Amino acid sequence: MTEESISGFGSVTPGVIVKTAKKVRTPAYLIDEGVVSDKCDILLSMPNAYGLTVLYSMKANSTRRILQSVDKKGLHFDASSLNEARRLVLVGVPYGKIMLTSQEVHNRSGRDKKDLENMMMHGLKYNVCSLRQFNSIANFAAINKINLSMRVHPGVGSGESSTRNTGDKYSCFGVHLSDIKDILKIAEEKTVVFDKVHVHIGSGGDQKKWEENIDRELAILKEYFPLADTINFGGGLKEARMPNETAADIKKLGLYAKKRIIEFRENDVYKRELTMEIEPGTYVVANAGYIITRVIDKKRTGEDGFNFIITDGGMEVNTRPLLYGSQHPLYVVTREGKQLKKNTGEFVVVGRCCESGDSQTLDEHGHIMPRKMPEPSIGDYVVMGGAGAYCLSMCLSNYNSHVQAPEVLLNKNGRLELMRKEQTLTQVVQNEI
Ligand SMILES: *Cc1c(COP(=O)(O)O)cnc(C)c1O
Image (cartoon, rainbow, N blue to C red):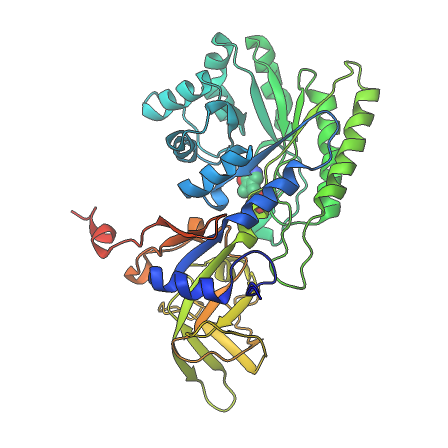
């Protein structure tokens, strides 16, 4: 009988956990390449009308080996900074597969501006997110006849929490509807063409909100962008990390978008057959990832207190609970490689940082919320699931002078590959003068 995976999907078994923990030190990140591959397949087969491009939003996990794996699947890339774009170039991703959507403004001559222009000459798509960004690039785009994309701020958004809503008035991503006309006027004077419209409303919001965005964005494209042939609906496709969550229904969203894009063509004076783009990060990698921690201590806080499990990895390896009140599944695997499944008590799982908020069991207000789970012994593993997105890439690694944890890949052949070495203390202090 083959061993069951700890989460009920993918190939990470209790045996793989123990093997990984023996290969590197804990805490450690582990990515199941097979799950990444399956998610890419689901996204690539999303129903569409006149063509689909799937961009991987690399800020979710930007380790080289992951980028290579996703590149091989045929996805393009959403970069959130010039450095992210540079990382893609280092990996060998063709410029034509990269779109840059950032808050940065490269308006002063210097290396950044030169690099950006060089990348655009080679095919990188620049997604204009503000008037100032537009002004910094407009002449260059006009002279070289490079078409641009515009990220529109629709005034409405959706996300799992207010800090992950990127479309309403409390966030400032993209060109607000009230500023579009100003930019388009200058663009017309300079003969700069916007051939793509982009909206990203936030991370992990409702399916319904995503559908509403499709309608809203098509209307914006119709009203303001007569030369656009591509519509990018952004990312934010919800993944179900916890058992009580529901993932976005990719097929259903695709069918909805397809219907609307066909209707758009029928009513459009130019009879445009729009290419559709999506750019998920979370959906591609979240459930492929695990963080392996080891139980180093147990404490209690009195009769009316709590039972604490102290592990060797907390907020510095996964900041999401503290940042958003995110819940991650917690699996218990014994030292001997047996998964404990029976909940035997309520526990508060904490890390080793000097912060009372360093807990993996918090609610959205930052209050501790004991979790019903099996009781691990000292030396057993507590494994966080749903940890492939925004964990390593967003971690507070050097707080308390902890080193950044290593990252391992369980590749499609079932072998463990070290993708990123554990940082050393020498590296932590090396830039101090
Ligand atoms: C972060 C981001 C995404 C990806 O969001 P997910 O919730 O990880 O899918 C897509 N597009 C843009 C512009 C982003 O900033």
